[in-house]
Image (cartoon, rainbow, N blue to C red):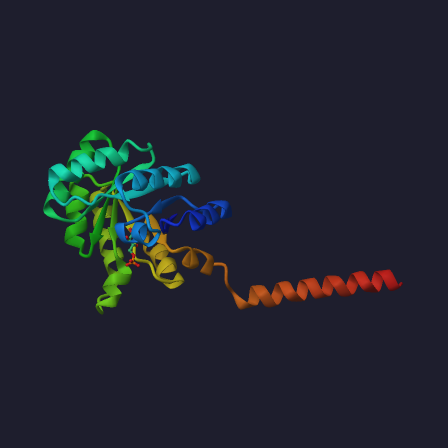
Length: 223
Ligand code: E4P
């Protein structure tokens, strides 16, 4: 399973990269706005900086919502770096744009996916990744993880190459369940990735090992 970090914050991306478990980055217009990145030149430069930090795929989302606009914007984004993945919303013109980029050999991430029908369309259009938003489904009392299960089942049945990229991952149990269900990728905030580290028995065990070692050292010195 691949781990992507869901942020446009360069410090967080660098920290996750330094941990050695990062496979890519996803951004969206809200995450870019959170970092105060605006204006075409700054946006492009920011994506280039992210690509310089990570070894894996970097999703950059189009703002246009019409086919011609998405194609033009996506081509500009893809030209920034070979690891850029053009992120396209699951709308009618978006499906056409996914097909266009697929034919061009440009990677895509179909975003804002909330149903298995939408995921089926994205795969048919040749999307590289499909992003079901599990946390946002949970927010409206719908089981987001069940959607991951359904999409993995459909894609396996028909041997689609589209990778299931679980998005809107809010906590460690989301991430672990996505792994159990066979999602190819999960994109999460850094606290969710780092949350996997935590177990009280690890902390208690380490503390005991170190205190036992210290006692043995002082016994040896006093002997
Ligand atoms: C990633 O591609 C999505 O944009 C992101 O995971 C959405 O997460 P949120 O629902 O926590 O905003």
